[in-house]
Length: 298
Image 1 (cartoon, rainbow, N blue to C red):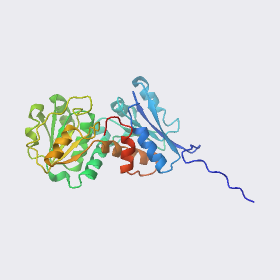
Image 2 (cartoon, one colour; image 1 turned 30 degrees about the vertical axis):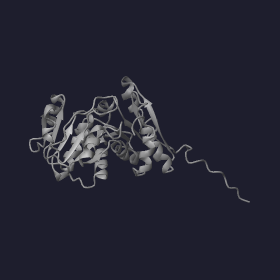
Image 3 (cartoon, rainbow, N blue to C red; image 1 turned 90 degrees about the vertical axis):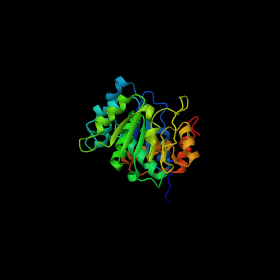
Image 4 (cartoon, helix red, strand yellow; image 1 turned 60 degrees about the horizontal axis):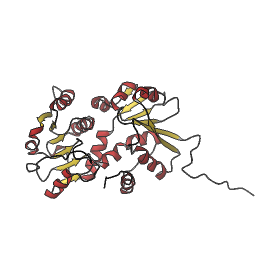
């Protein structure tokens, strides 16, 4: 008589488990463990995704330890993204152009490859949410000049947007992005004064807010949309709340709008695929699951 041995639940780890994680300081704000944990359970993967609260002084040591510990790789969040670029062995072209790394893969020889998937996540969500938008439709107006802005500008350049009008409260920061990304043969990025943000909407096909204005607890983004064509898409990467005052005003006048949560979800896809060997899907169920853990998002 043969015996049927009980099978462990699929959440159980084994000696063959694939392990990844996320470095941050602090890391408690990160939604990545919940997001990747959902996918691991959904696809029945023998693996785990672990948050690491890592002080900046120990970050390089911790990152370099990934191969010795058998990790497949890790995400990198604030404040380590820029430092990560200097700590890895190789970087993708887009990570070098953005000047920061948010996704690290341990390669077969134990070296670390860094990538930045923020722009990828932005563009994937934009195209999924605004199916009629095309990169060649016209200029994009990008508000803000932080790390997210630079990643989005790189993605828009690579997608073929004909002109990017960059505006920031501190003009010098916007100029630094333009100087780094414009070339002698390709000068599609133009920098504009913050006080002119309403006027430069004229003829725009896409408006993107990458600032924290409109985020819960922050001042509202004050901008007159009168000169923005109704055919333009308005994208706000803030997701707390999900519908910012900018998106509400744009929706009211008839513009297509794109919220910020999808960028977070889509940017995680390349790392998950590299570490766990499954191409994950961004679904309504996943959105609801992640949203349930974000106070004030709804």
